[in-house]
Length: 592
Ligand code: PEP
Ligand code: MG
Image (cartoon, rainbow, N blue to C red):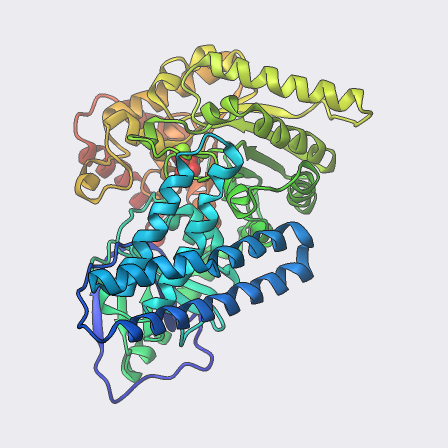
């Protein structure tokens, strides 16, 4: 069980259990760290006359702890990276110690007799709004500095984290929502699992948990208000449970269950490094999806035959200011560590729920239909070129594929390829060796791309089906929205037709086609995916051994027969059942 060492049960207090939706297997036993949304507007609480000094003392104490926190960060950064980051903290200290802000806050507290939380928050919001409205891009971006400082002060004013500084010890992170930018800011070496109030099995928090082999449960409604940082819990990522104050009995039961699961898992794991050939000898390449550099070892150990999707936007969110040299070094490390395996880097898929606030200063009404993926890259050619040049340089270390996300039609592919060619020409002129054999691909995750897959296939070396988005855009169902989650159906006939159409287009053009959406990891659907003609599946590292085990027990002709029957079916549930029947017959042990 993750985090067991040093943990004890609490025989005196009672267990309390919450249930949610299990999205990533495993069990962890540790203290929780509750990540609150610090920008919940504080209530405008009236205060008693005579308590104004007390309110100001609270603010001064919060400012002092924040000062120490920023100085500590500055000290660490100075040691690690030099002056640029340290200057940012200098700015933060200036904002924090601005005496005008302190005076204005005090004035509001005394005149309106309101709590200092509200007064300070309102004032800082006014400053942020003023900065956001400026035409000078540099000054406009300073609103992020004010936001960061406000964030820290509000947290300390509310008394959060003071007794449990972030990640001194391994923790289970509990949050209302865990966005990709939240995830990159966590000290992932200390995170043992996630429990989130919102989300779904295809939200990025769930995807990342599976990549990092951490237990995760989503849709744990109300959990943030019920737990406090420092509470001891057990998180069951398979049963979808979170148990506060687990008893000795519960812990013993989970230990036993884990031992049994490990023994079962060993059966699939022993053959994970062998190729995945079907019973009839067809090769199905099973690759891994990855987001972070530290996953390279997990990928290597998982039995993955390639990295079919490296989501580069997570590295970007971790360090948006990385230079071309730093990016080339980071990508190069991934490529050389995994060589001779192919690594498919997807160019930045920012936008949607993966927001770099410095690029998207104006909130969009519909971010998932907005400036996302290749649209953003083509609109910020400076950023795009920096990334493409770094990827072309990294390609010297091994086998690289470059894949464009959120392509809506062939013109975007042509435009992106033109920028890529410019980068290759520039590098060659600079004397840098650019390998010829870099493969270029496009993701099929928008219905218009699937419908024009024949046109796109003529321009690329491979296609990859991003079903997480393809499903949401085909059925018009937000992949993160709990209320419509029941409509998010991978086996909807329309989705299957678009997949089939894309496979036919790729085959017609003689290029490779794979799938890297979460649907590729669904063992119930493996027969159907093979039957539809896919021979590359890129999945979470934790699923590699199991998907390979499934593939080795399937016969292509039987899968094709299934796909033929299914394409005339009307009901998503019936289609799922038909695929499950084949799966149950060929590898029942995977469902025990
Ligand atoms: C997809 O949409 O299926 C995909 C792989 O991309 P992401 O989940 O990052 O949107
Ligand atoms: Mg996608």
